[in-house]
Length: 228
Ligand SMILES: C[S@@+](CC[C@H](N)C(=O)[O-])C[C@H]1O[C@@H](n2cnc3c(N)ncnc32)[C@H](O)[C@@H]1O
Image 1 (cartoon, protein in one colour):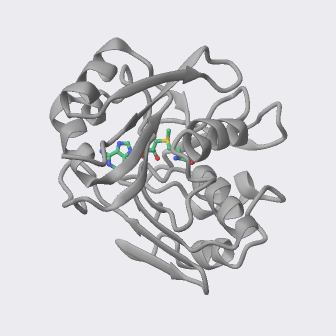
Image 2 (tube, protein in one colour):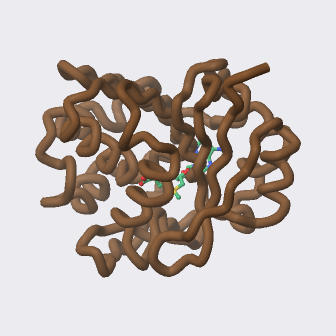
């Protein structure tokens, strides 16, 4: 019997040598065609300051193909710091797509990556533990799932663009995400759209525009204040 149709289509080689894939469901790339690894590093890892954090706790909206996870993993491993990573994904791509997109790429030789592939697609709560890494992928609609409160040092908002997937960009959902940040924690995303910046501001997060990754003029980060 055939399984459900794959949400991922054609695999795309991007200019920095990393790969991404086209989403059949959303009609958009999972990562940037101008450099999937570069986007992961610039927008999410560096945008949230995760590359400097002594013990990052990352919350990700849209685990997708795991490109952001691998970029975060190599950075934490390079510095020898522990990593706690919690991601939501409601439409997991087939494991072969994750494997092919990652082949030979950063982080694919870390023990956490084959451990993830080994358990992928089998359960609704996937956990991987290595000496320094704790990864949990919850196969669920993040809009309906309970989120940790005051927890994340970094929040990667990566659920496709506001035009293609407006549900993860509403003021109400962004306010929920803001509450999942620990004081001083930073949310990063590639959309610098005015309504996104206004919703983040209304959620109590001061927003900062930054230069974008290759192919994009701007991206944003928004950091929860440490004080009252
Ligand atoms: C742009 S891709 C993420 C790419 C990913 N971060 C990576 O590093 O490969 C967006 C992902 O968000 C997922 N997604 C979109 N809306 C969601 C929702 N409401 N709940 C959970 N996952 C969602 C999609 O299925 C897709 O895999």
